[in-house]
Length: 196
Image (cartoon, rainbow, N blue to C red; front, side, top):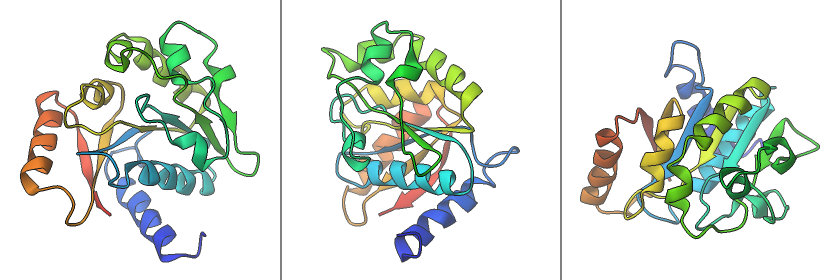
């Protein structure tokens, strides 16, 4: 609901992001968290939706190939998607589905691969984001959580920066510090934190 307080809160986040770079809202951004179920996917979806409502053409990529959820939010399927492209399917545009009512487009995660981190280690993710930015104003990556997985630090290489999501009274401060430390270790730029 665009008039809800939750929608207003995400509009504020979009406004804050507009001051985070010298060219306004980052063109490629990743959303991550310490662990699962902190509101990371909801934040990715809400941020992409708010950007699309402002007239921008947005590609939301479900980069959580271990636990995909974005296709459910848009009422689609997860038969094909990001994992297909990373495994060698070069027609990435065929893997994108559009919301007919908005400027929001989604690339689902696709079939769960044997090793998500191995697929993300190649240069194909960087190639995808570069090519997508030729057709879209913004690319938003819904990343897997950080602790215990290699995926988020690998994904941070292909975006301008990260939005970090933390659940209020959820993860212990040391867990958040450890997660931010992993991002800093790979020189990821953290735009800020969203408290859910």
